[in-house]
Amino acid sequence: MKLRLPGRRDRSETAPDPTATTAELARAGGKGRPTPKRNEAQGRRPGPPPPPPTTRKEAYRRSREQQAATRGTARAAAARGDDTYLPARDRGPVRKLVRDVVDARRNAGSFFLVVAALVLLGYFVPNPAVQSYTVFLWFLFFLVIIADSAVLGRRIKKKILERFPNEDHKMRGLIWYGISRSTMVRRWRFPKPEVPIGADV
Image (cartoon, rainbow, N blue to C red):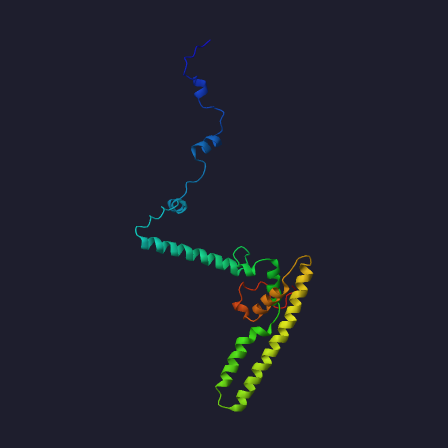
């Protein structure tokens, strides 16, 4: 029988287990894998944090840069239609449906700038007949916009009642939201169109 002094451990307990596998020892020692190259290890190593600003002007410049980066990210997300970053007037599935209804058709209001440019050019032509035709064209185009907006408003109302029948909608505001979007050039609309022209919404 062996006597053990207090505070001392038996050698058999401290000795490594000879049955331990080579893989376990390799994992414990951090080996068993190829040594990474120096440029790879340095690429994964995080760089030192930037020093704190020394002047109020530098702190203000850094704050401006950070805010600009945040605004750019938020605007890109809003342009994609991310509901989290959209302004209050564009949020919600009902507003998205209205945008899709407008973007899926050709709207007369989208040609407003083109017709306005033609009318403006006609005013500079020193010919009374051309100027009178220009006024007639301007008046006729406004009638077309009114008729097209009426058709668009009925389509928006029909789609909303089909898709969301059990909700209380402010239909007048939703229709005006769609009509105001239809008067913009397609590539300038915000959020950007998500459906092609002619799509079945």
